[in-house]
Length: 316
Ligand code: TXA
Ligand code: MG
Image 1 (tube, rainbow, N blue to C red):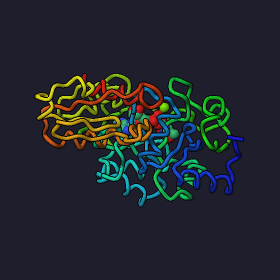
Image 2: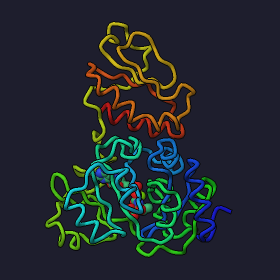
Image 3: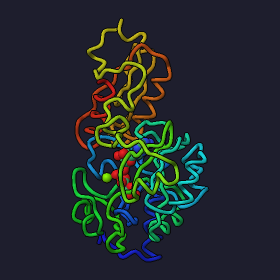
Image 4: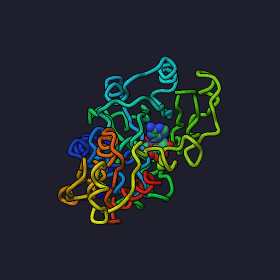
């Protein structure tokens, strides 16, 4: 009984599932989303696992009020404020400087976070009831069609989510429009709000940047989260001691000898744990000013596929 009509009672239960670190599907005015706590790296990692996303594209964080916004965004420019006043709650996602509390897996290691305040009453009620920001991509399996009805979600993900809140077909049916403001206003993803409406507030938007291919496409761009330190994907067993001295090692389960610094993704070998820690540990190693980072290959199953995709891109 994954699909349940959205009522005060089922929304309360879904919120409890989220607070316990679980994943639920819920309606927004754009599309159905797959929700998890945005400030909990493990919960957010489950979204990637359920979607079978081959890479950690950054997720959109949903908020219901100013207090939640302040938890995820460090700074809000006057231009961003003007857009919020005009379009929130609604189908506009704004890229803002991220607060430290937002885990790397949610932003794919970017210094920014994409935020929106949805207008759907069920989405808002779920946020308020949960009392915390919610990360949510569209609730489809990777490569599948965008779900605009609870039944679409059920067909693709029904066995994998604890609950799907059904509020009928979504009003907008396409994802939110995504803009950034720094260094110049730009349209990152065309969506449910027309670019012209946004330009009426902030002036001309750069448009030759989109999420699939062009310069600003996080998650599509080979290097967007690559550390400044050169990185290669290699098991320590193949690295002679002389090459270890000045280097760091990102281990999957076990710390090897001889490296200047070592971080372990998951001592118990859990790929979900490893995914949840990947970006944060890469940041830590990158900050040490090492000659190189050697990253140990992880098994390519489950979230291991996404981890390896990210490591290979970081090494590219
Ligand atoms: O309508 C929507 O936006 C739906 C509903 C559920 O709210 N959500 C949605 O999420 O479409 P998703 O995961 O498909 O969108 C993520 C996209 C990324 O592929 C990327 O293009 C952009 O949002 N994005 C996320 N964080 C970003 C960032 N920090 N900088 C630039 N773009 C970002
Ligand atoms: Mg999507």
